[in-house]
Length: 221
Image (cartoon, rainbow, N blue to C red; front, side, top):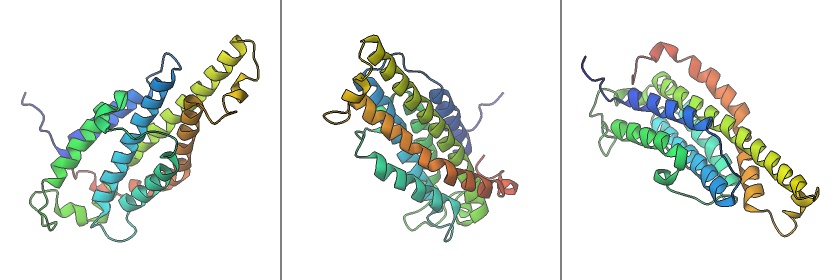
């Protein structure tokens, strides 16, 4: 059997699978550096999704779903940046594989466009078709949904383990003192992860809009 061709759709679907796998991975210990890097990696992938959504929506007409997704992600990233360090997607830990696949998908698509956005490949014309762009955006919406669920689980785990550590030390108020001189790295990370939940409601609306583009789903497979 011939090898499956590496296309935009193949790479984008690989990114979705890899992100879903990373989303259910568990942190063994609550160690400041580890949890901060894991959360920063998740946010680095989210930022990459936002940049790719901006690319998809750049010439798809006003009010397209890709541009809306980019705007929603940027709003959350603005709130997150004071709480977490920025890291390169190549250093994103369990999220690096998904980021690599999505970055490659972006490059495959970008290679089909000239410097003036003139089409140089079969998928390039579709970038100006709102329904086709909505289909591609639907994948990104699913990807962001996995990140939101992962962030929610990780933030909950961090809070539970901080409480367990406080009680184990015989100091039920220990969790409060973590904030006495400014949030600890772990508490600040949980706060940052909580902010991804701001995307949940807008994402449901975007998911419904993208579902209407199913008739174009053969594009970019």
